Length: 239
Length: 239
DNA sequence: TAAATAGTGTCTTTTAGACACTATCGC
DNA sequence: GCGATAGTGTCTAAAAGACACTATTTA
Image (tube, rainbow over all chains, first blue to last red; front, side, top):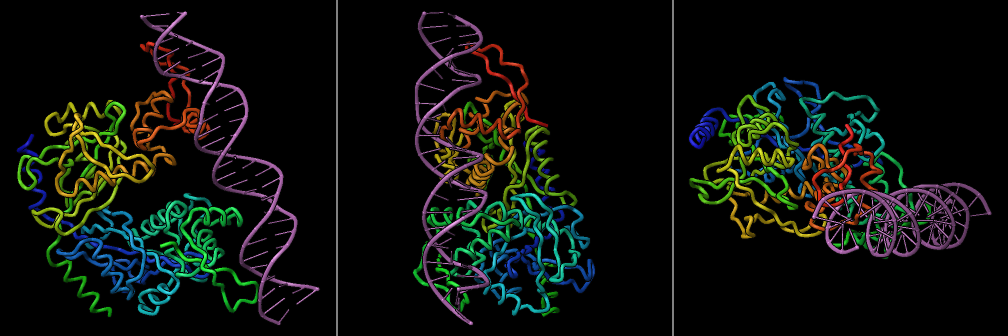
């Protein structure tokens, strides 16, 4: 068995290798709804369809490094929560050849989301997603601002779906939600983020209790300005 | 920007490509403790150290298909819960060259675990892990049956750690725990699985309540035999 | 009978939901 | 004052933990 195993491994290494890319799901909030940044493909295959920003992984480049580089090149961005999502490796996922892609989830706070749109105005129009209510269920669709369904390229629909599921799954037991907020935020804004991701409304007092008891956020003693109603206290993440 | 982007992509595709492998973390229970199947490397690099079973991904083979193939070849096994874990892509993770590995978590029930050991007696001695108490914390170590630390090859320690974290994280909100049990099992066995993975003891009546109220398991009306004490009722997973 | 484990009942504690209530801003 | 939103208090419901208790087997 040993030699056969060795030869099998050797053969596989000596022959064709797949290309490896990194694709980013850049997520921010558009109003009170989750949105991703996609670009419309100009060329075949899938010309006219919408695709995630991505690029090939250099031979001397770590996966995380490639994701950071693509984030910088495509979105002009260094400030973002970035985490590996899932690796998509169906044989026929890209008609140009065998391309395995490692998908990353990138969360942009409002300023970063605006910067990314300014940096890549043509390549990255925003889309809005409709997560069905409930913590894990619900199919994700990409929509225009007007609410029309957008066709996605390759398997990018499945990738966006995986991103939303990851976000929903980690929201209430990790600090991932804060990545979508500015440094100073109100409890209402935090609740808006959670409601946007989960796709359902949450109980106000229970939410505030949970968030404060968790010890992740600190009241700053400063307050909103320029409101036409009672200003809310600003919180920040406990460092 | 468009043409530059195109050329950059083109260059990356035309030049060297990384090799892509799949590595499996085969997990079962040894007594009441989680254990994985590893093989001792015979050759350099990392000769003598212990490594996960794995292999190269064929150019016309999906990642999931490669994982199933390696499971079959290395463990003689078709019955196992298999899920993609994480992709490890540091540049220097393998001194033989640029090799990106997609790690999979494979859960074996007691019969499958025994079969795998019988199928690969030399390549796959069992090791036992020591998860520190608590739902997410604690470093994972590979130990011999006698309790001595085992040196792992490459970044396989980090891969095993990721596997245990995934298992711990999904245990109480998914049906992943049943993959480590036979088709018919007692509530005590189910609790043993949870305690082994979490590394802490659980409250008996609360655990039984939760499991039964969840509706995932069904009492069969049959009971253990050959016990020297009161036999427990056998349950099965709701199909 | 004793020893061992299965399985239940119940009280307490904690956490979440419902929802009304007060507080503070601009106008 | 009114309208709007921030923030609190309190009751209820649900879930989890503690822990003693009963039940059923073999020896």
